[in-house]
Image (cartoon, rainbow, N blue to C red; front, side, top):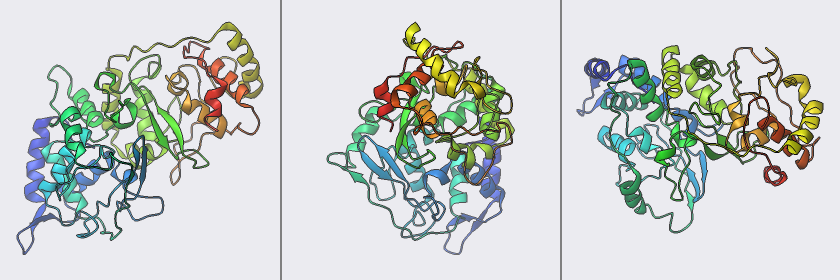
Length: 419
């Protein structure tokens, strides 16, 4: 998921590491030794790419695959990327690995599905690709065999992906923008490449391809990320500085959130728990700030929404005051150290209210295995058993239409579908 600042720097350090960090094995194949600089760099890059989250089932062997990805076309399971020669990629060459990363074609010539985000990974530089490959050779092999995908015809026909690639794959490594700063280019390289932020935060067309004209404008994903582990839709928010996205967020807010899991705007919950826990909190502060610099400089999505009516807001205010006002205050600004602000919240202002409804109904689950720095003392509790669908819709509508928020109203049917 990353590289270092500037292509010239990456080239020089990459070549140096490649020469210094490889040992020639008796059969003539080059393999990185554990602990070398190349391997350490590859580990950092693989962490930035969050490989472990997508290739490790809960409680399973690291990188052994089996994680389910629920799509409109069926369920796709991640593969074993350990160096096991039978079950993993131990029998692959580096060239075959790079082809999979850039073109979505595995060692046997069969096509991969874009649930594996090769449309993003194609932007990774040669030097970073070499480092990731070197690191993957050092992890513990696993003999766990791949879980068969559950795709209906014709989506189970891999050869169709050749047509998909022709239509939608924009192959080629990231090219720096000479009109932007080194920090901005670093952030763009991470977001567009290894971090593959667009895989969740960009809407997709009917063929499952990201809509290029709506890059990072927000997208719906299916995830088990709630406190009860049920599969539900979540909305990955608009990452542009738009009213429906991160307009209220400063670059520091974004960097703090990615690096610490908490900021003045919110703390991590839901699907972002794994992203931050396994990936972005391990980035250097400089890389988190580079991502923030890039995101805050994006053009706003320009999305607008129909505001709630005066009557909807009046009814919603009553329910909000009873159930939410104590912690989040009548002003929606929250209480420092206790409850985050709702005014300007990206989740609240999102084009689709699914994540907001999830939090109101089922609570905001804390991450497992790590704890963000203490910032918000209280954890959002579930209201699904205390409030009817209509009442939750009233509250969500009021929140989305107050204190400068300008998002569309939430209907009772929207909440019912989230039960």
